[in-house]
Length: 230
Image (cartoon, rainbow, N blue to C red; front, side, top):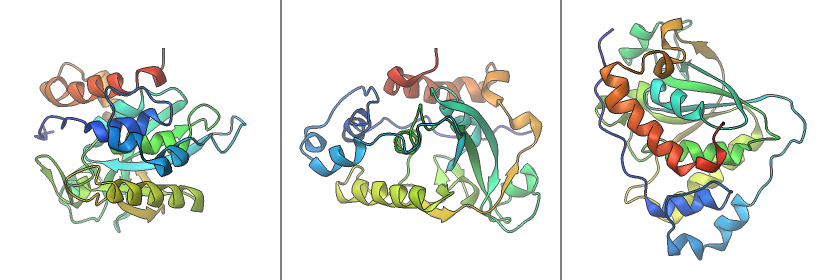
């Protein structure tokens, strides 16, 4: 398989980092503007909506799923991450078909998590940290609808939270450009071929993993150091 070229992970905005620390993530820096934003503090001071150990799922698309998978695997409360495709019209698509951009699918990850350990709010914070949500139908040099920023919500609560966060980020001008993340109902998830699963952990010495995935994972770990698996 040809290696996909991508730009290095963009520097996290300090204004975003305070948002994440407000929900008890450990951030690298803070922004006074967000420190004065009461609505953000209130919204992010939420607890997991469930106290049992029932597994729930979040479905996020944030560019290449190798990067997304490798980042979310680090978080406590995340039991499993699967790479695959969602949001298109072709049944049982192959990776090669999705790469044409003609199936309508996005590269996504199903994130299976314990809501008594990590909340959907915290997963949303990680989602908006791990990629650039202002790029429409691309991430860096990966161009096409298959690389779009997208949240496929599984219930009305997930929809409301995603829409609230997106609105707040745009209202507070967290980036110079507006967040263009698609928020759509989940329909079906097609698991990608086996060689895509756990890709970074099993192919860490490959150039793409060394020069693209690893820097993203390292920065992710620094931001969320208090939420990492031991």
